[in-house]
Structures are given as structure tokens and as C-alpha cells.
Length: 260
Ligand SMILES: C[S@@+](CC[C@H](N)C(=O)[O-])C[C@H]1O[C@@H](n2cnc3c(N)ncnc32)[C@H](O)[C@@H]1O
Image 1 (tube, rainbow, N blue to C red):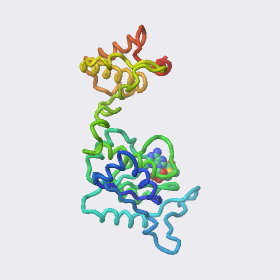
Image 2: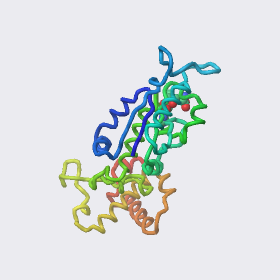
Image 3: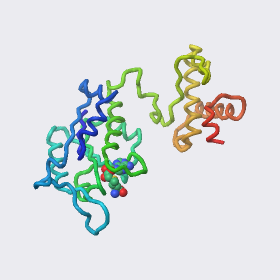
Image 4: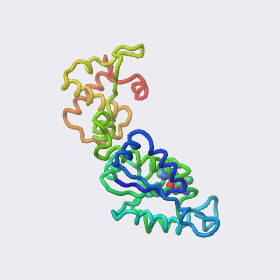
């Protein structure tokens, strides 16, 4: 997969993508990234990339022409058609489903704004979709682009090893992931749930599913409302709730407190 990033600070994203899973994907040729700086396509001695907004008001707006020339150069760097994504607080929320869709493409161009944003005409003419990483405003699109690169790259085939498999991650099946434990079995902070050491794979799977359902119900009831739960899931969730109200160790204390 190829991802081109258009930004006034392209080195920033290159740095973010140099570590861990994404860094390894690059080293193994599963992901190729290139940064493009609109300033390199700006005219004049000052290589100006922004100007004051028409209508007045604070801040600056990114100029059409340097961005357009930069985008053209990025498109022409590879014959594969690219989907152009503008990172913007006004975009559709980035979800795991959207990440999976993007990961299915061979080429993306991520466009990062700065200042008050980009001249609307360039967005209308060149951008295929706008994505937001949350309902807050960043000073630039670079962090958002780095989020997209990381989330997308780890879903490309061969990037994650078995041990890091994304299949059970939160949101993959509409639920949050179950809690995880490792050694030691006994610790002053508590013991590992015995079922995880039972060797009974069916029971372990059932316990994990119940925890995932319960945890999602406690922390993200909106996801439970949207999930298509089977009859068996509903029974597990009922069992989780019953344990929570009665005897059980169904949920970590902070979740119980949150839901109280
Ligand atoms: C200061 S922001 C501009 C905000 C814009 N005036 C608005 O209120 O919609 C500068 C740039 O940061 C990026 N950005 C800010 N918040 C973002 C978010 N939540 N998700 C994705 N990109 C964001 C966009 O690329 C944007 O052009």
C-alpha cells in the first residue's frame, strides 16, 4: 500500500510512522510512505502557502495553488488511482469500519490542513472524503494523518503477526475487547481469573465473550444498542449483569462505580 501525505510538516508524519508495527511494515515493503510539502510548490521568494480570509476574521487560509500543484505531483508519482482524504474536524468520524475500508485500498493521499484550514474550492474540487479523528480541534492535520496511517497499516495483510492479530480488537465485531492478563498468576494487585488457566478453550471463549459484552454494555452502551446480538450473546450479557448485581467478579471495580 502507498500513502502520500501532504503537509507543511511532512517529516512529522514520517517520524510517527517510523516506529513499531508501522515502522516494520515500511521496512518490509508492505507500506510505502512519501511526504509532500506544498511550500515546495509555492511561487515567489517567500514561497507563500497561506493568505488572509476573505470577509475578515482571525487566522490564515491555505492557498489553492501550492496545494493543487503538490497534490498533482503526488498523484503523478504513481499510476495507481489515489483516494484523497482531507483530515478535518468537520469530516465524518473515523471508525474502525472506515479504517478497514481504507486499508482495502492500494493508495491514499492524506491532506493535512493548518491555520484556519484550506480554501473551500480546493476541497470541493480535489478531495474525495473528509475524516475527523474526534470532536476537538487540533492545530494541524498531521496528528490525525498519523492516526490514520497507524490504524490503516496494522490492518494490511502481513503487517501484524499472529501474536498481534487485530481480529479480537475492540470494534472489530462491534464490541470492546475483553480484559487481558499475563504472568504472574498471583499478584498483590489481584489474581488472574481461574477460567483463563483452566485449559478449557470453550469455557475461555465463553468467558471472553461475556466480558466483551459486559464491558461494552458498561462503557459503551451505544455500541450494544447497535450490535446485532445473538440469543447466546443476550444470555451471556444477562449472566454478566446478574454477576454484577450479586456475587460476581464480573467487572473491574471502576466499571461498577461508573455504571452505578
Ligand atoms: C485549526 S484546524 C482548523 C479548524 C477549522 N477552522 C474548523 O473549525 O473546522 C487546522 C487543521 O487541523 C486539522 N484538524 C483539526 N482538528 C481535526 C480533527 N479533529 N480531525 C482531523 N483533522 C483535524 C485539519 O486539517 C484542519 O485544517
